Image (cartoon, rainbow, N blue to C red; front, top):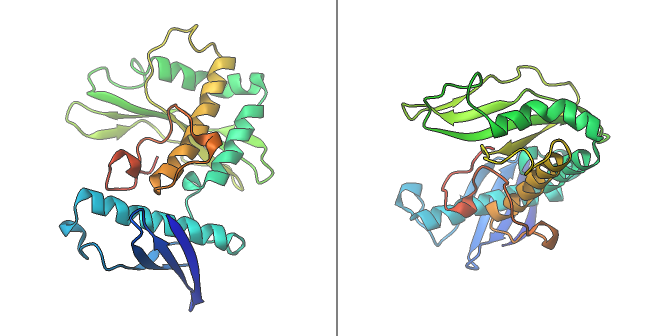
Length: 246
């Protein structure tokens, strides 16, 4: 997709986007990054009347416009979820890549065990599926590792409802939080030796999240992020018509 910042007026940012088919979209965003207007002459105005493919394109255009506005006015603090900004994930990836092995082992042993064996005391045995196992890492503005959250498990219970195990209530002040998210994995302990090989898997997850951010907004990832592996939970690139949050 191609984007152009048209200008600003009365706290509104104008963005022109050409979608994957070359069709023009005009969008207006406020300084929180929220889309206030989305005009185009190609697809039905009502989302309920669009095909899944048309709705995917419309949503990707919105996400691309949000990203373009954030990138253009970055110094103005346009609010965009850090979980969907490649530069922010790159910070987290570098912190995890250079984290001393001993520190990684201290913070990620519980997470490693949950990824390998998520049942037992963590959740009930009679669940339909374990969907994702998450852990937040907290880093400072200076890209220093501050700490991490407890492990949380998202699963589908026997009634088909999505459930999440306990979450941390408090996050460190003046810290940026980034999520490491993996599915339940079946592997022998020697497959991902702890901590070294598992630390590499965590770094790979963050790298693949960057890949998926680009795919989610209809863009080809930069060459260094055209990699195989486990990234975001799901994206518009997967055929969804709603933006996931993990």
